[in-house]
Length: 247
Image 1 (cartoon, helix red, strand yellow):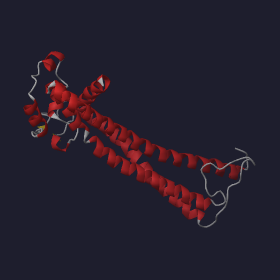
Image 2: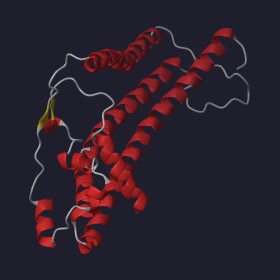
Image 3: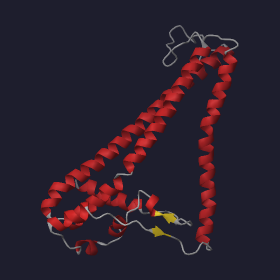
Image 4: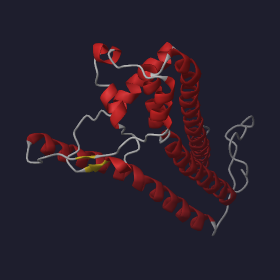
């Protein structure tokens, strides 16, 4: 329990930490990970945290469930400084890397489509490298065309799984700031009785969200792992067929 609370405090600090200050105006209304209360609490020292007054149960519950946090805007007064110039240069490099990663997906699908067109003219089967060889991922070893169709189906399933998983992870992670806010308010302002009743529920919600995100991430990784294994087997057997050598 103590380690989870420490993790929450560290995560709350990470939500409000940026390695470089954003040089553009940021609307915190559209930032699901910023909370002014969390931002204030994680920057207090130990003496200031201990000095926060405890509320009676009725007042605390009212502040917890009735009052909503006020979202504001943070803007940088000036962008004419070395820090903002460095960030603009670094941002260009970051965007370039993401551009390469994003473009790789459609290019792979385009190449696969070209192979499907070529295989439609003439089909052939794979040859076993050894008599004891067992196809682990290829379901149609007697047809290269059918194997490419299998590969395209596996790729579609992998991208669809990743797409739906990212949507679910986004919705789940948007719940974390509110749970962290509740946890911090309970720890710093609630009475011992409310801490015993509310804190376990809040911590359980955070743990559930984390576990769900891990499960969704693993599902996506496993689907792409199957695609990579199938593709590797196709490449090995194709090379063996071309060169007539044993793998």
